[in-house]
Amino acid sequence: KAGVTQTPRYLIKTRGQQVTLSCSPISGHRSVSWYQQTPGQGLQFLFEYFSETQRNKGNFPGRFSGRQFSNSRSEMNVSTLELGDSALYLCASSLDLVSHSPLHFGNGTRLTVT
Amino acid sequence: KQEVTQIPAALSVPEGENLVLNCSFTDSAIYNLQWFRQDPGKGLTSLLLIQSSQREQTSGRLNASLDKSSGRSTLYIAASQPGDSATYLCAPRGGTYKYIFGTGTRLKVL
Image (cartoon, rainbow over all chains, first blue to last red; front, side):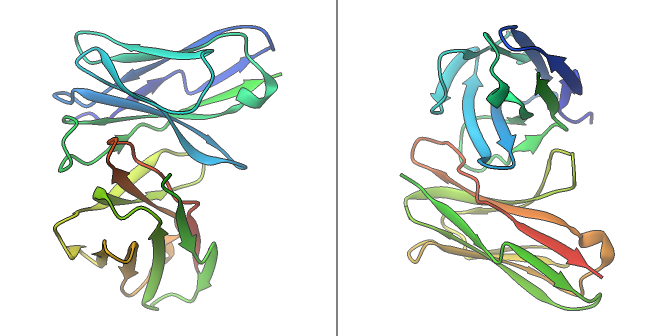
């Protein structure tokens, strides 16, 4: 079974631009969540989607948004990029929202903002 | 607000040692707790998931325990190997279903 796939693996953008990251979950998984990882803040939760609806949201500004499609694939968008948005963005999928379903992560998208 | 602390932050051990990684969390109202490992520049690999009703879970040389009432979990690695070198993270899942991640323990097996 294929794992969680994130594209692209690397991105370099300049301040003020916007970026879209993509995540394909494991087949059959309906929940997708996104995380930002930086050396200073560690892993922080961005948002979680299930059945095309945002179910949870972390403490990030409105420049960070996402969506989920009917095939469970998800995209995350960051508008008006800032230098502080440079990070590894990780996507994770799970079967559903219930507690017995473990998270499976992709290898992430490394975003560098210059 | 859930806060997760992992001790120690870094650990170097000779090959073959048994070791214990600690995770503590402030809000005991959790549904489960998951342990992950992360290799440099990579995503996280799920190691063990313990439900709130369970006391421990085992997978090969790994054993994780959970004491929900005291807000603690430990990951026990038996007979450590160089391939175990990685950062280990714990993440309890709370009432809002969000996973909150600890700061991690960076392990080096020499």
